[in-house]
Length: 195
Image (cartoon, rainbow, N blue to C red; front, top):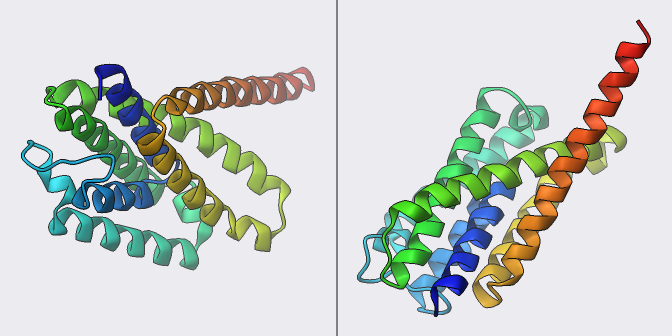
């Protein structure tokens, strides 16, 4: 695979982690174990397909689900949300770096670029989910994390199977971020004019 496709793949995997980090990491690890689309064997990122890393991801997923069931707002704001954001950025950086390492490139550019991609998508989806949740009844709002997990899994699969489509996803999330910020600015400008 040439460098362009590897970068697209890494960016897509990091973006998927920005939505929700757990299922993309598990899918990538499972496919890497089977040497399907990605393979971390013999690289500095070999641990990404190892049992300890995948067990950590499963444990973190279980904890996130339990915390969300107890109080769905906890993962939207506060220390738990910050922890989840950090995990997402970290895993996104690792998967981007792993994609580069798979083709014999250095890890550090992937770590940096992966964190940036994950944080961009995270900012866009956090705003989108917040706006969508405000309009939904509590039952429908509780399903939003399931949709987010599904979207992250689909994006990870697309990143591995059709890497150039990852760029389309990144442009889409950048558009969502800019549009969401514009709406927030309009809302607050309207509130300031009421003074």
